[in-house]
Image (tube, rainbow over all chains, first blue to last red; front, side):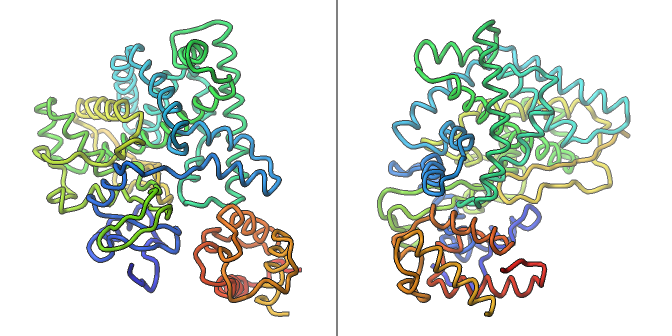
Length: 402
Length: 89
């Protein structure tokens, strides 16, 4: 443990994070952050070891909100409902059940002919931009593609997507800090309520007349084998929506930014599209849409000589681990020849992201479509990023056609 | 009363109520955890303190400080710095 004068994470933002991570990795790879009330881990080996530790557990967010509601006599019913549907806020045995439901529901997405649908949508958005001469690759591409997929997966009518996105927008702020403030929880409850209501209505609708979509599939799964209420199902849908939108949007627009900044890479990929999957893996590693996650370990642990007591919270900085030069040589480069361990962009171990495969696929499709537009260039205006610390997608990435 | 005294008075009264003990038994030099209180209590107290004093408080600060004195002094300095718009009644 180092006694740092000022917590290096106190001023963390997307603009300065990699410098801060680099210093932490080198000098204080395991330190107690007063800002986050957690141990902060930044080296790949430590982060990976904790993620895969057989006794590592996610924070019990659902239990926390329940205790808060009871002791504070507060009505946080919507947050409580949503939290108990979030796979990375639950613990075994409930975690296993929630994960199984979500994985099955998400697996159904591949029945939708997603590859073609997504490709068509990506081409259409870029062609519209081409006609107009410009496109915002964050708000008008990454975000819209992410919404399109999650909307198609859940069976949300397209005309409702932007409005739902407006309600859900900012909900990921709840993952910024280990302890949310009461004010932010009350705000979150106000956003969660209409989303839960919306998805409850959608599920009722699908119960009356099924369709070939995620909501119908969830209803069938629930009836046949899961034994959960429609309100619970609405919780899963809401979680999917919130979790998928901003992270995938960050991944796609982040990848677009990286490609357009690297003309040689762009030329190489355009010349050989079989390199796209490896490029997408590199983009995901560099963007790391979720910068950090928390865990607790059920037993004492020694990392980098530091004793960590059972139950003490650990903040695992995936974004730092993914640029650890000890594992990824020249970590800030897009290296299409890179071998070695998988990045931790989707975390690892029992809480690995359920949507990893879908998200990686979305990035690949979005990249291929972009590579097919040789006239597109970044505009001189700099991109605008969210100021959040954790899930902070680009909000604007202006581009134009030469 | 100084800002620090007002804050400490509020914190002590609040904790005494939560714990069901007389306010005098809450010591300035001790920490939240030493009274058996946890992160749920910290979030609730920070939330009410925000309302009462019109400030923003990260609940984690209550968990991480070594004594109430530490956090009350820091918060008082923040409030005094931010000027007269802060409502302290």
